[in-house]
Image (cartoon, rainbow over all chains, first blue to last red; front, side, top):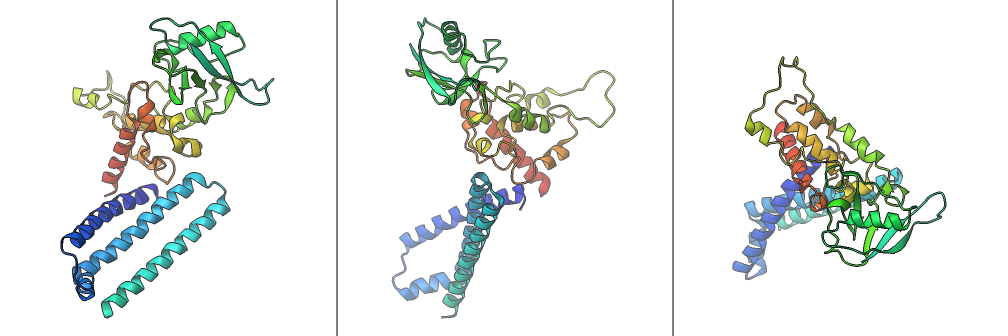
Length: 109
Length: 230
């Protein structure tokens, strides 16, 4: 990934993460869902589930760029760096798949 | 006043060590004056210096943990003993003298000169006062190396990351209305290392003895790159 693309992904995802988290927490505080059904209805509503999907997309790409930066800075030996990058990528991909499964399951209940 | 000075002579010492000196100070004394006094006490001690007024950039040193020019650093506010070390991250040649080859190599690779493809004007290159103003805060750099050697990204990747000093100069020519190689300059800085190892730590801006702002220049380069890409 080129420097510019990585940097742009990091910036854009950061803005989205900050915005979404503020909205999410403030909403939770102001109109706290009274029951599981309320909570479920809020989370699975069209806009919210889309925003949630974007949140996790932004979270994983932000984590990828950030940790990749740390590895590029500090880990010099090529094989070690490649191994760590592969572990990172598979870890993030695994979590992403898990999240997709949860979101899909949540929507279908 | 007490001074603790980094000493290392690769011909006789196995390891660097700190040596203490006592200097009688007077009002208005700069660190360079104290170092000259120390050199009188021990002639084997060496450090680079030349103009003595913050113009040549020769006596960049690590003073009580912060990079700066010895000739314009007043000693009265310094905490005792004043610890003077060579610029961090650079190979030590002897005592406070370091090898700056890599730093100059990075400087050279940003092509720090005007590149003009059109035929040269008969008389002179014209520039409006507004265009000239854009170079303020960029052209004043004296290449002392305080910024790049204070930058953690430059410590970890001095062979690949251009470093704040070279990037400030790169922007100095990108911002110059007379230069015609902006696209080439930006392309050369692409990739994850040359420009994008900068994590906006801002040590460079903190230590610059000429009060320049390499972090801002790097941000401007990124902005122009973004504009050109979209």
